[in-house]
Length: 197
Image (cartoon, rainbow, N blue to C red; front, side):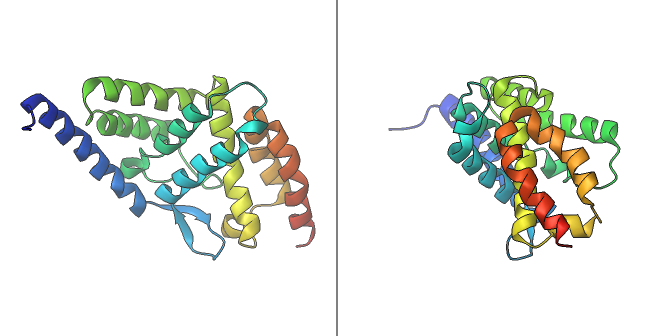
């Protein structure tokens, strides 16, 4: 059976997007994994999707794990154009937000219109951090790196000279906002780590 031009054009656009998304594997993050090497953003997105699948039962509100996974798989695609913004680094938040919005429009705009609109809306929902799904997804995005830092013996905390007080002030509210049970589990482990230093 021969493809119709419309189906072929749709598939061309979808494949162009997917091949562009492959570039996320080349974006290096500030977080180190268990063996000490730096994580890339594609690994981060996959790991967060797995976090959502396994930890979804700990969300404080009713969520759609499938929607959370979808958010997490696309949330960092903008880093293809905008790069990673280390959480404890110096970042011009307004400039980074504009750069990421432009990247989202470009990347999702590669898809057929209905898919582009759907994924862009999902990305904006994640960024706004207002729905139960987005709150849990955002909290997982903040919950994963400290666990990697614990596994790697300090990781980016060492790289950015982070103290326990700074960690707790900057990360605590972000994790607790959408995943208080996960924060309650993590906080004493981080405190114990810093107390041994």
